[in-house]
Amino acid sequence: MATTPAATTPAATTPATATRARPTATGPAVRLVQVRRTYPDGDGVVEALAGVSLDLEPGSFTAIMGPSGSGKSTLLNCAAGLDTPTSGSVVIGGTDLTTLRPDDVTRLRRDRIGFVFQAYNLIAHLSVAENIALPSLLGGHEPDEELRRYLVHAVGLAGLENRLPGELSGGQAQRVAIARALVTRPAAVFADEPTGALDSHTGAQVLHVLRTTAAALGQTLVLVTHDPHVAAVAQWVLFLADGRLAGSLESPTADQITARMSELGR
Ligand code: ADP
Ligand code: MG
Image (cartoon, rainbow, N blue to C red):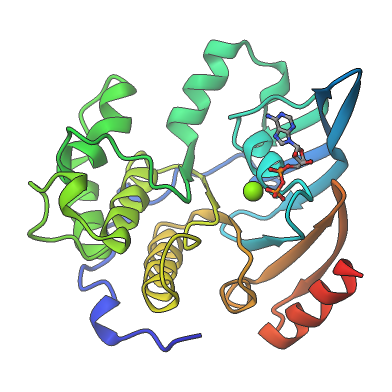
C-alpha cells in the first residue's frame, strides 16, 4: 500500500465518550444466520447468497473479498438492511431485522447503520455540510454539532463545508460520504468498494480516514474490496465464492490474501 502521508491523520481529537458509538446489547454487533438471497432469473432463480452465517464482534474491522458476482454486495446490502434475505436472519446489535416491519427497518438502518457506496451517492444540490447533516435531519433531529465538527476535521474537509459535491475531487467526495455515514453514531458501518473509483494513493488515504475514524468512535466496520492491500489492513478477511463463505484469514498479509484469491479463482 502507498504509505499514508501524515497530513491525512485526523488533526481533531476524539470526542468524549458521549459521542462514541452507543453500546450494543452484549453479543456480536452483526450476526447473519443462514442468510439466503435469491433473485428471479427467467424461469428460475439466481442464488446470490446460498446460506451465509457469521458473527462480527463489536468494534471489529472485517474485509470481505471474493470474485465478481460471488455475492459481496448482496451480503453487505442484506447485513445493512438495504435488501431483505429470502430466508435466514440478520441481527444488528441484538435486533433481528427480519422480524421488523419495513418502517422499523428503515428507522434502525437510519439510526444504527452507516453505509458508504463506491459512487459516493451525495446529493448534488446540497453543500458538504448539508450532505453530512442529512441523515440526522431525515431522522428528525438536529445533528450532534460536536460530532459533526469532529468528523469534518477527522476526514480532512475543514474549510470545504460550503462546497457542492460537483466542486470536489473523488477523494473529497468519498470523505463527505464517510462523515455522513458516521454522523448518526451508527454501531456498524458498511462500505462497498469505497476506494474502487479512486486512484490507489487517494484510495489509501480515504481508507485510512474511514478506518481511523470508525476506530476512534468504536464502530464495527465491514468493507468489501477487490484490493488485497486494502483488505490487509483489516483484522479479519472473509472470502466469498458462489454465494458461500469460503474461508477466512486473521490479520493476513496482502500476499496471503492474493494467494487465497487465486485459489478461489481456480
Ligand atoms: P459481487 O458484489 O460479489 O460482485 P453481487 O452480490 O452483486 O456480487 O451479485 C451476486 C449474484 O447475484 C450475481 O450473479 C448477480 O448477477 C446477482 N444479482 C445481484 N443483484 C441482483 C438483482 N438485483 N437482480 C438479479 N440478480 C442479481
Ligand atoms: Mg459488488
